[in-house]
Amino acid sequence: DAGVIQSPRHEVTEMGQEVTLRCKPISGHNSLFWYRQTMMRGLELLIYFNNNVPIDDSGMPEDRFSAKMPNASFSTLKIQPSEPRDSAVYFCASSLSLDGHSNYGYTFGSGTRLTVV
Amino acid sequence: KNEVEQSPQNLTAQEGEFITINCSYSVGISALHWLQQHPGGGIVSLFMLSSGKKKHGRLIATINIQEKHSSLHITASHPRDSAVYICAALPGETSGSRLTFGEGTQLTVNP
Image (cartoon, rainbow over all chains, first blue to last red; front, side):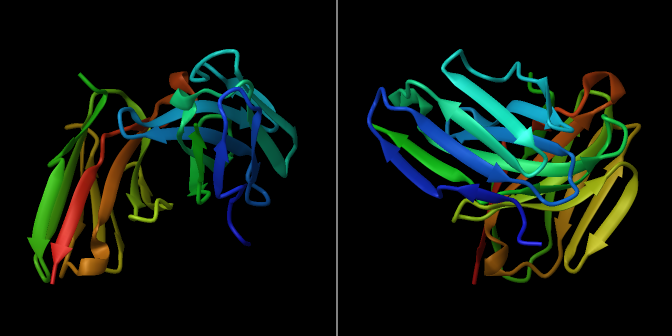
């Protein structure tokens, strides 16, 4: 397995533009997580899905952020419109959850470094 | 007060030294993770444990559920161990799957 695959690795965009980050989880994993990492706040959970259903999106900063998981092998995180304060590294992770609570084998993607100028 | 606290925040060691990083948490957990983040930014899950001790190569992780404390040990440290080590708690059943992260420990191992 190639692991959790994120794209793009780097994204530089102008303020106001739409940004879409993509994630392919590990095959067989049924939980998917989007995290954001900044120097000021460290790692923060934005949203997580279990069996393609959003379970907890309380970490999503505001309505400009949205996430979808149309199938078990793909998820997107969209920011529209983007702002300079959204600049961060965005990580996707997947794991296997047998009962909706316990998670095994967390695997992180390499992250997308987003810069909004 | 953070729910997960790590110490020290920064640690510098000489190659070959034995290293310990500590993690204390205040929430009830179902598991605790130790993550490693290299300067390039990638995050690797080192251990997930809910009791006792786990060992992988030169890395050892222990957890004491009663004391709500975990440690990560590195034996015979090497410059390539230089990274940020992050402790993350997976809360108990009532809190779902949200990992709560410590602030990380920056480890630098000098040759």
